[in-house]
Length: 255
Ligand SMILES: NC(=O)c1ccc[n+]([C@@H]2O[C@H](COP(=O)([O-])OP(=O)(O)OC[C@H]3O[C@@H](n4cnc5c(N)ncnc54)[C@H](OP(=O)(O)O)[C@@H]3O)[C@@H](O)[C@H]2O)c1
Image 1 (cartoon, helix red, strand yellow):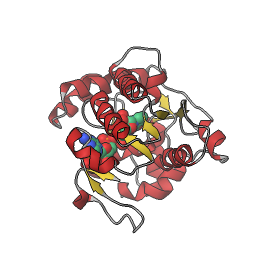
Image 2 (cartoon, rainbow, N blue to C red):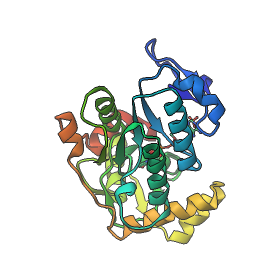
Image 3 (tube, rainbow, N blue to C red):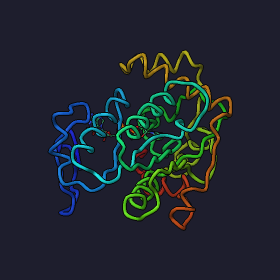
Image 4 (cartoon, protein in one colour):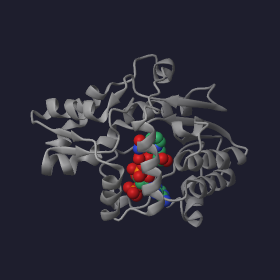
């Protein structure tokens, strides 16, 4: 496992070897990829195509046999918006390496609701400009299970898997479920885009990221991000976990 700061990792057990490295610093990657047969690559924070290109370069030098990339459902979207462009560019870097690849393209993570922990604890409220728009949040454990499957069984090379949870929920419906789980009344407030922008500016987020998030929120609000696939079930032979199952495991974070 490549991490930027091993000191921040909890106990990973004796079977996980931890290597210090940074996908933004190609000079740190050869040591991390040495002796690796198959790699699960996650590119986050920053220029995704640069990170993916760095990973692909190091993987190629190390003769890695197969890369599974954590991409995004947005990469399958024919519409033109920033997050889709970033993920399409990252996938292109992996494909250009000539190595065998599999693209995991999840929709919204169930764990995104952890972004609400602060306002839920402080104000009993969630503020988001997504109205009644719904998404089908996927449990990160299902993404991990699909990654393991793709890395450890044959037949996944050259495939792109769009992964979602099993049910479409609005943010208000998610908040109602959190409320029931923690036994406390909570409000969902459909704030105007300007208020959401102001909140992100105050949090010091970069303008390019703010614009990209607002684009996604607008798509969700317009009901244009309500995709549900059965790919998790097809690949794993069991149903995708529901948001209730995610809450049963992680909901204590909201207490
Ligand atoms: N969240 C969603 O709903 C969603 C949906 C579809 C696709 N995705 C995609 O899935 C990927 C992961 O998303 P996320 O929301 O889990 O991202 P995240 O929470 O921002 O970051 C995931 C991990 O990436 C590590 N990381 C960041 N920069 C790194 C670097 N330069 N070198 C090595 N590790 C680095 C972080 O490590 P540290 O602990 O060191 O910070 C963190 O553990 C992204 O490509 C995202 O676009 C997300």
